[in-house]
Length: 258
Ligand code: BGC
Image 1 (tube, protein in one colour):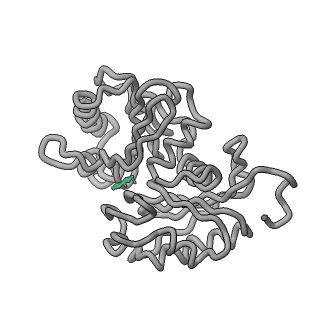
Image 2 (cartoon, rainbow, N blue to C red; image 1 turned 135 degrees about the vertical axis):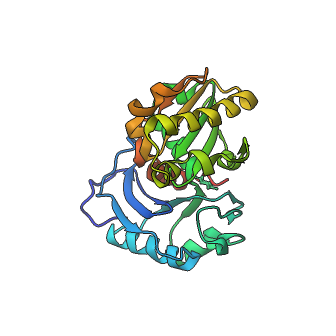
């Protein structure tokens, strides 16, 4: 199952998180959600075509010296293991059977593929704050795009894509992703005003019990969450940028495939 350096008898799976700028992976202890190997990151190949990305994934799994199950999450709707949308990845992903693609590059093992925000949400349910396991939670990731996962009493409703909801005149992620903050050089306060507008629209339509905010920028939540005026509580995610990898590993361990 592994390179012999992992403690024997453990319950491990490999998780891979495909992002707009990097593909990241590690082997995860499924009982604790901790990484049991280093985290390997390789820049996302450009163009990020299915074959180029699948090769990068295989390279990471090889570097991890791992020959067991692999869960993969990526920024697309994954329905019946077919990618359905490509906002921040190459358009040739649309219609690709991702299970077959990754199986071809990682033969002879279990593979599961799911949306990146759904994976991160699942990881927060298992290993994050109690707030994610109770009530109707809208889990959001702020990165290259905005990812969403609806979670009701710990159960995921997959593939929701709220980053593409029109808020005002534009898609939410075109005004309030963390990439937009970088691109437009916005202060945390300026950016928080945009996030607030998006959250108020989500609140108006979905009335969640809490927003849980993840993605790299959740690490700096003290810099922007205090500026939000939305009524619904906004809670930073606990697993931060580990969540995608852990959730992907969980998907293959638990055979969760939307
Ligand atoms: C994609 C989603 C993804 C989100 C975060 C959006 O552009 O359409 O599938 O979850 O970005 O990566």
